[in-house]
Amino acid sequence: MYHEKVLINKKLKHGILFELFQNRALYLMALPGIAFLLIFSYYPMLGIQIAFRDYNFQDGIWHSPFVGFKYFEIFFKSPFAGNLLFTTLYLNILFIVTGLIVSVTIAILLNEITNNLVRRVFQSSMFFPYFLSWVIISALVYSFLNDKFGALNMLLKSLGFSTVTWYNEPRLWRGILTVINTWQSFGYNVVIYLAAIVSINNELYESARIDGASKFDEIFRITLPQLIPTIVLMLLLALGKVFYGNFGMIYSIIGDNGILNQTTDIIDTYIFRAMRNNGDFSTGTAVGLFQSVCGFITVVVFNKLVKKYDDTMGLF
Amino acid sequence: MDKRFSLFRITNTIFLTVVSILTLFPFLVVLAVSFSDESSIAKNGFRLIPEKWSLGAYRLLFEGSVVFDAYRISIIVTVAGTIISVLITSMLGYALSRKSLKYRNVLNMIVYIPMIFSGGLVPFYMVLLKLHLKDNILGLILPMLFNPFFMFLILNFFRGLPDAVIESAKIDGAGEFRIYRSIVMRLAAPGIATITLFYALNYWNEWNLALLLINDTRLYPLQYLLRMILMRVSYVGQAAMNANVSEIPAESTKMATVIVTIGPIMLVYPFVQKYFIKGITIGAVKG
Image (cartoon, rainbow over all chains, first blue to last red; front, side, top):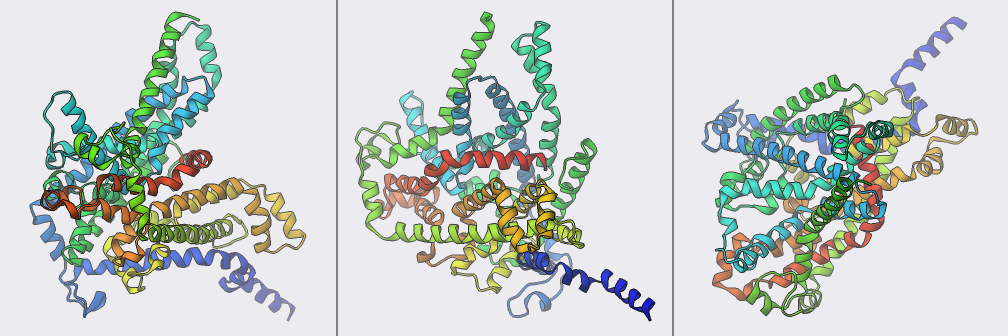
């Protein structure tokens, strides 16, 4: 009798229900967040199947006719698929490399400013663009580049050059977008690199100074080498996201401008347009699924690399 | 002090001054244009120092109710959204930080997977429609209520809290809700401040959801209103502008809308940026 009771108790103690009851307050607290994810992240995953169906409104996601890989085939056989993919990856790589060089350089230079107040003022000014939405930034870009009043054309005019119709010059825009992206995000990255520089052991500098090292020796032989781990980690984490374009940026600055789209259209804006302008849900889902799968693989691979590089880092 | 050293310092300071000014420059241009007289814009284009100053743009902007309506929507969305978001996020973070929670790894996985895989825009949009969020102010709040990155950020904060405090509170008979409310939230106040500001910034700057869901002009948040005002004159409207000038909002009005939209951020920026710096540094350390 007694034995049985202990057994039952033991069983209960290990059961799901017992655990849920025992920690009911904690599970209750976790519930809203988990419910959110189930509704807004997991539930949409059921909709992925319309990538393989001829989606129509009446039949819905479960009963529209099954067509296999038809929409993937249509997309990959279309003339713009290669270009879209290339632009997405190429823009991201331009952003990553330029951003890295600029923010590491600025962080190192900023670290050399010894006056705290001056340094803080510099950092605050550089960090400011990070707080602006892409709609705001599109307005700033417009104030610079619109051909009638734009500040840049006014400058060109006053210097005696002929003006440029910026919004009609697709070949310039990958460069322009790189400048914009760097401008928007370098202050954010400077924060990270500056934190890394500050944590470098001061003794290294002191002993270098005793050995008669110049400022440049200090930068190139101590600061930069000590920053390499942070740089590599930031690079790997950024590369993991290389298949995802910045929809907010491209769509607010370029929008549906057909001329510029040749060089600036990315997977994300293409999906949005397929869905919104053409009502083509199946193509949009198919391309989105392709992107998600590629994105998933790269994130996992690059995170493995991060882990290999440094166990304590990485997302998982 | 040797000469090279001070030469370096001087050039470095000048260089960084130039970089800082250049960073703020576009913003200064917009500010100047918003205070410019329309006729001097027509004559000289956008300039840092206009020929003639004017408050006309702001007067025009505040004459109608459009901007006030959009402001109201943005404020409602930001305040309501941020409060609920911080509650949901910190509660889940707290639950996951407790080692007595047996299934916390399962819950961890549930939070983690959406960070690396999603159903994509189209299925997400279909869910929003299914939930009747079209032309509904909830559509600007609900889909953004929870952000896994911020959850992990606050989770790290909670993990750093001394276990002994929580254990002794438990022994004193405090329930989990009480510990969360009166101990954890207080001890982790800097972390809570950080995610609050991150969420608030996200809500204030949000326009993608409005782009997807809002057709009713009365429900436009400020960012989306700005986009609509800008759209009429950027490249798309360029042709239209030449055809019919009267239909296009004046340049100074557009730039005044930009300033009005950034306004709250400018006001709080000096006081809050340190929390963002803190959040970024912690976030970066933990991927």
